[in-house]
Image (cartoon, rainbow, N blue to C red; front, side, top):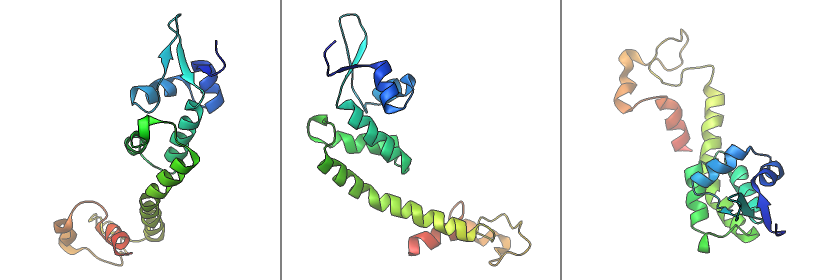
Length: 150
């Protein structure tokens, strides 16, 4: 085996994921492998970095579809360089900031009415008489409105 060829077991151990996760990432087109003459799966060493990027993005809540889209935007579907990571991360900042604002509003509104229409809280600061907010959409309308106003 050549030094740059990594087995699926080594890759899983080194990246801190299950072998099934590697297979899943491959099925989703996030990473690539090839088969050797013994039909065993092999990975290029730079796949370690690619998996690290995937895991880091997942930890901040980026969906696998968005991660795939970002990785597919790299020339020749290469493994991200430091500069690529900076670009990918800056593109995800807006999404992350929106999620943070939503979570902050959720935290701040958790013990009061968030306009869901359930009318179950006896001390609702904004009584939603006859579920008037239903005409504005579904879910926690007031919470969503707070986020979009920031």
